[in-house]
Amino acid sequence: MTEEIRALVGREVSYTAPEELGRAAIRYFARAVGDDNPLYTDDAYAREHGYDGVIAPPTLICETNQYAGLPPDADGYAGHDWHIDIPGSRKVRGGNTYTFHEPVRPDDVITATWRLDGVTERRNSAGQEMLVVSSVATYTNQHGRLLVTNEETIIFVALKEER
Image 1 (cartoon, rainbow, N blue to C red):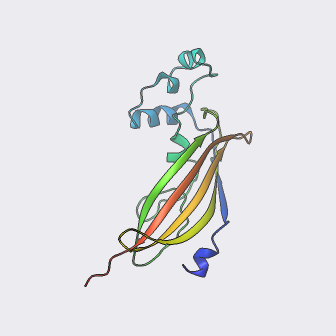
Image 2 (tube, helix red, strand yellow):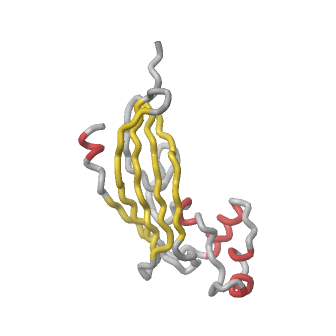
Image 3 (cartoon, rainbow, N blue to C red):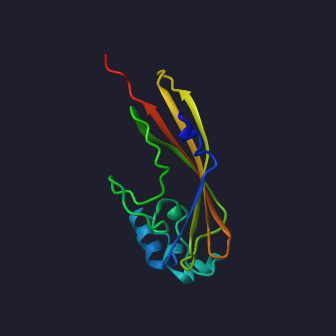
């Protein structure tokens, strides 16, 4: 682990969407993930189930990057990245833990705040060195209400040396 990587711990960045999430984004996401729950498309149905109107599928704001307004990288990814590059390693998504605090509504303007919480060196069961990067994203709306928390782990696994 380099000093540059160690210095990233505690760093925080925020992105605020330029507009409301919108009903179309909710409908398109639900369709894309194959979820035909009427909570996402039918106001009357959503009201019958205790909401003011349609809501978003729970992971929509965690899986979209429309709030970030970032240009696509070389791989076409246009979302948040800590830009950690470790030569001789493979980057692996270690997992996510989501906590849903409130439903996301079409009129929500989303702010995503990412904080790099920790960097740990480990070895996997095959003896390969790994760097485990943990971060937390909080998603709030224009009223400052916490909607979702996303704890994310990214792992950089050292490539096996050829013999």
